[in-house]
Image (cartoon, rainbow, N blue to C red; front, side):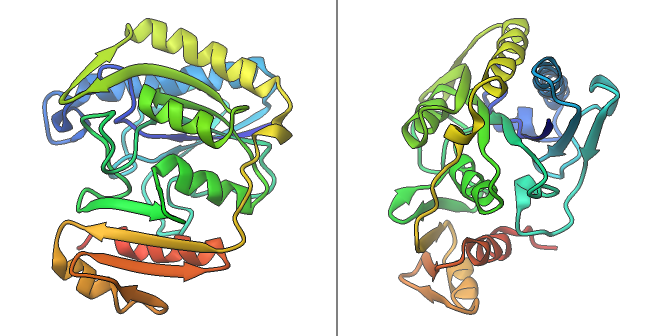
Amino acid sequence: MKVFISADIEGVTGVTVWDEADQQKAEYSAAREQMTAEVAAACEGAKQAGATEIWVKDAHGTGRNLIAAGLPQNVRLIRGWSGHPLMMLEGLDDTFHAVLMVGYHPAAGSETSPLSHALALDITRITLNDRQASEFLIHAYAAATLGVPVAFVSGDKGLCDEVTQVNQYVGTVAVKEGIGDSTISIHPDLAVARIRDGVREALARDLARCRVALPPRFSVQVQFRNHSKAHLYGFFPGALQKDALTVQFESDDYFEVLRFLLFATWPET
């Protein structure tokens, strides 16, 4: 079995404020260590379920967060960003049997996490076919274009509830719950144990049931915090500026949606 793990940090247990997700801040170190521990647990659970090849995409910020020495030796770690439209699933192809998402968080505009966002902090909301789109949903569709199911997700309770609504067969582990600007987290060691066991159980099920059905057509709207961004990305081929802050893009091909989202969220240099 060949497994792909996409790892973020805002959905890691205990992570509550932006300083803990920022490499330049003192509080980041502990969050980075717990992120590594939770990903290592997912790797161990996958190995127990029979995975013989495991790839990990460090998918937060710079893509250089995970402590490589804290991961199993048989893991291939993807660090940094190549600029591929698969974004947080960069490196995934149709040879993989399952995708696991660790440390994920609710969508921009959600009230279930103090760190809710989607792809970029200057975006206040993304909708896909009129549905509020989290990074989970955006990338679950991406995996579906390759025929790869998302088998497991860990992170905030609000996100886990969304995952179950999208597909009840996807395994989830909620490691914390957001209330206003606060979080209620389980113990770091308990999170590690639950993720390991949750991954093992998820990969032992019928993975075909975890596949997310792709709609026949996609309409994505991105609402920016700054009107100048909406003006700029309204000139993307096929895009339309709907109002001062919102750009819409439609396509029958989800890869084209991913291409639009990549350019609309790529950090400025």
